[in-house]
Image (tube, rainbow, N blue to C red; front, side):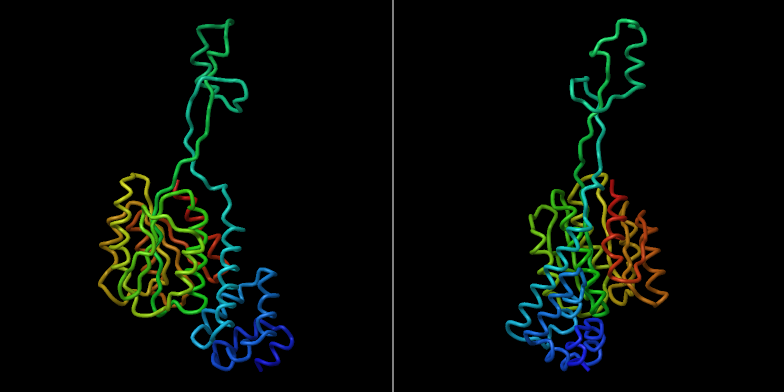
Length: 304
């Protein structure tokens, strides 16, 4: 079946077969024809490369594994760059003396200043307006536990890539957690989007879901910013099964948003909603990895 799917270039069938017979499917795509088929799909924006990489990486060897990994990274980064525009930059509005070429002015402030000088109003009486981008300061918290396999791990990889690209001129930390947490990037560390995506690609989903430890580790970075408008985004399926209740840790935040990855267990939704409520943030659930970049950008739009 995998050979037939490859012959007709049916990458959707290959993905389905990979979840049923990973060893056989890995053997079929470990060929020049297999890589060319995946490359053609990737060139059209299809996420088949990262999906197959996450599903089959344990069974791929040598240059085929390396090539599929590079295709996966390229697809994820291209998606992040395509979606992560610069239109969500927070702005600070500053009143300045008017000067030629200034695009905006504050009408109310100008009238207040000029009312007693009519009709002899000069340029000095006009109150100009300048808009300056304000740096964002925040923490991304990724679930990499055993339940985050295949499409769910692609969800985390896409979210990390979107965050890394959108926040590349800002100050942010990146924390991953499963049974325990680990710091991928500190608040004061510089990291490229390639490094962030490579780290996620090399992460094996394993262990339990210790949301409490993830939130606790992230909080130290969250505090380090010493900024009253700092924020955090937690990306998880919400199935907390280690480390005790995450709720006391969530309540310490003042702006903690939750992006819930696909899942059908009611506990996941209840946990994610409660964490967002306690953390003073918003909760968005996605049903498919394709929704992740837009959902994350929406959450980042609240971090003004």
